[in-house]
Picture 1 (cartoon, rainbow, N blue to C red):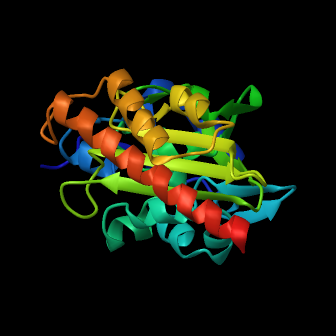
Picture 2: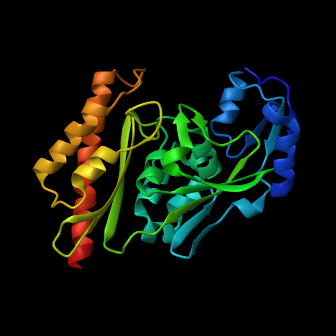
Picture 3: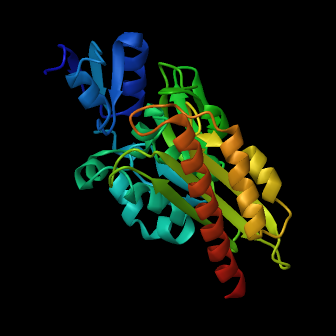
Length: 293
């Protein structure tokens, strides 16, 4: 099937893209990586009258460390994140998540900003930015604003981003050097969207107790979720296998998964519990290695 007819615009400056969004309103769609939007247009699920291609805005493609944080331009591609030595050194779980997305072609074209704005309930980056307490920098006609990751996702395929705003940057404050993270995903086939996934960032104090914890999960509802109850359970305690099992039970009881072709609600609850327990155990192992080195 072919997409419905549309007008194609390709601004080279961010200000021009924002003006075009203001001008065309709900008739316009931004084209970032296009790995979700283009198939939807071919199926005519999405029918924008105006397509605003922002590939030529080079100022939105970068990875840099600045003022104790990693800053990623929204047009940074998955493959750049996957292969970045800075990301692998500072935020390994982000590189792990990028490597799990689709296939080589998707990773070469898709962007982190496009994936986050798409807000697929089974996407990979949502859990990661929640675990890392990321911030989304957005720009529109009314100026710039910062949206915490915990407030960004509102429903399936829906965010708090206004229709005339552009996600320009993702900011992730760097954790303590003794903190370690992991991203794990359960999928039907390699590169598929997640049945369930968990991102865990964990730090230990000198006595081996958990003094820093961030957890994000997918597969437990209509949006990626920050597992606040599990964070509260683990924070300040020495993490044992029994406590990890308790964390798994807690997330299973609170999850409200969407039943679809990837599995029943009951199956997804058990899958989320299992993947979270594995992620906590692995992040704990990595944190203990860092603490003893």
